[in-house]
Image: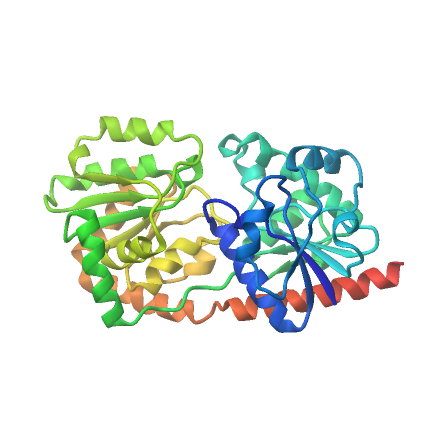
Length: 377
């Protein structure tokens, strides 16, 4: 089976979608598939070659993102085979799948922020629904990373439930206790404190870091040694966090780190007393699973797929509620037994998510999509 995969998300700062694409492109060759990678970028394609397995071919014709996205929103051309040659299936892991001449189409939908919270989206993201509608009309199969997103896609787009397939992401491998202890010492050195709450992720409105700052302020007086660390690169809409930091009563105890290396990320996750994830909405939620893999208890908001993914492996807070988030963080800090129970439940949850299983299930979906396509030709 000849498969073409969009690997554009591997470029630049790695996000959750980039992690998904990396797991996909590194495992597909093991399934004895003929894999071709393409990138919808004119300037960054060459930089992607070192990130691809040696057995994966890469298209050489340039693909200019802006004109292509505009054309695909209005026409069913140019077809992906112009770049890839003859293929059996094309997979768009990042909300967009190009039109194809004869290949089956599969598109991954990670969340529906563009529908549920358009005010939190960039102009490019707001064009996703139009592209998804066109793909659905062409008969594309929709892969979602959680059951909750699958239901949202069916409800909002009227997609055929039989063509919407929920296959969850994988999860990181748990770090052993001794490894966590070594990492934790480094994380606490970076934080400048033995006790800190960690917020981690690209700074954008959906992550709601301003509420985390306010929640920290609410509990800081009673916990004089506690710090808040927010790590991750600036995305867009960073003004709200900047304002929250500028007006925070305990600004001197808040550490704002930008992008951090994988090594520092692991250290910060292992050393934190609590990992706080105050997201307004999530289609899956990889960072909380990363924290649990480093044996750090999680506080999360009851939104989107987070309850589905985490189960009992979190203390829960209401979305956007400062007092609720502060109470949840305090409950974990003050109750060691609760933290242990969350981590124990987390290790159980991690065992349910495997990238190998994810990719094997996607290959099964490819085969199903190809068989369906052949019956229509």
